[in-house]
Amino acid sequence: MQRIAVVTGASSGIGAATARSLAGAGFHVVAAARRVDRLDALVKEIGPDATAVACDVTSDESVAGLAAAVTELGGPLALLVNNAGGARGVDPVASGSVADWQWMYDVNVLGTLRVTKALLPALEASGAGTIVTIGSTAAFTPYEGGGGYVAAKHAQTALVGTLRLEIVGKPVRVVEIDPGMVRTDEFALNRFDGDRDKAAAVYAGVKEPLLADDIADIVTFAATRPQHVNIDRLVVRPIAQAAQHKVHRES
Image 1 (tube, one colour):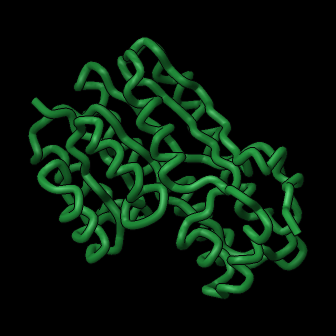
Image 2 (cartoon, helix red, strand yellow):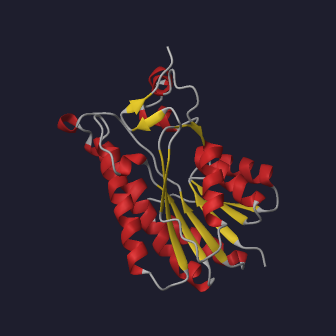
């Protein structure tokens, strides 16, 4: 029976690329996100190896619906990719937007918690489950203007590390992938409230930032290692980015 992989935040960027990659690796992918129109287009592109499920990871009811949809498919749940997340704003802490911070915590941290809680029993029941959480290099390196996002990603990585300790001995791997600079269609644009010039400036002069397909390839690699192999944490940056604050930009 075909193994099932759930990918949250699958309507664009890393999530959509990961859904495509996992389907190519033989999984039946449950693509979950809020924007149903984009999910439908993605599933049509992938074909019969994908199912679209509308899901808002900030809603308990919506996540319960995702779990029910996975159960209805009938196959073993082998993989969860916690990809839903994002950043809003670059305000300093002294004038930080509480609403932006709340949103980032709700999506990145509590969203990961909700989906993981809902699907962990099925992952364990499969006898060979894997949880991959997409974090960020912000999870361990603060930077100016990134307080809210940095705080949320620190919390997310603490959640992942704690989970790994708590379920040791169970047949579920816990993997964290922390990308640095990844150029996608929406991440920076959403962070700057739709300002395309500010979003473009993030990548200005960077010859080859990472792309969504690069991260999708790494997710698929981690998920398809022999089950006894657990990649605890993988940090990936473009060669032009030596650290969060050190990026080579061509003039």
